Length: 219
Image 1 (cartoon, one colour):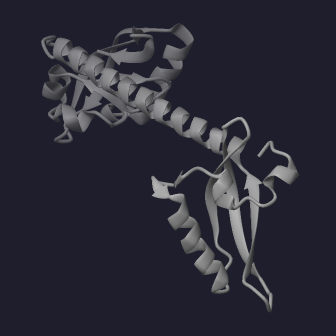
Image 2 (cartoon, one colour):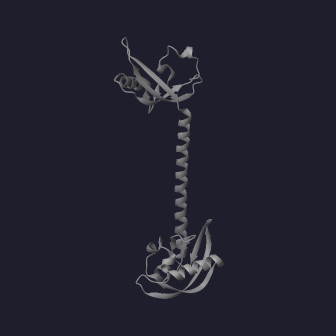
Image 3 (tube, helix red, strand yellow):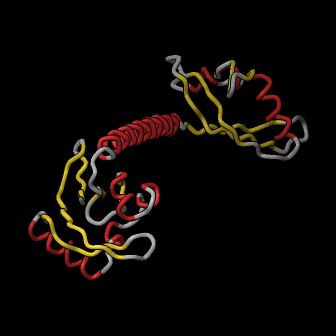
């Protein structure tokens, strides 16, 4: 508490505590209830806020224990300063809230960007699919791709781009060549439609940056 021991002697716990504790509860009522628990043989443990010599709030881990006595009921109160811990907890909560807000904002911005790209790509009469490196699921598919493969854009998004090809081995070889050369232009390759039929297509593959978000674009 930052006070001389002699000055504290003779004071009650209420004398060195905030008048309102917890969620704006009367310190007198809270302490009386805890005292009753201690007298009943329990050892209540609770958070308590004292006031130091400089009026600073001191958060404490408090515990009450009834002491055996033939003459009167005595209760021993022990206080452990947890002010630093409470400050760190508050900082952690604030940091988590800030992080959650940033994630929410980033997610909203990503959805806006993807909606903008989808609107642009849907007017292009060429099948387009985009995904994040190295071989993540498709995050953007246009109506042109849907028309070619006979699937909805919703079904295309989340699937693997290589799964759209008829031969998985050819797809792996294509990606290996792309990693070596950095781009693929007008490569004839066989694709598989949703009804199981196959067709030849000209495929191009390149890297693009969408607001500093690197992606692979297949046309």
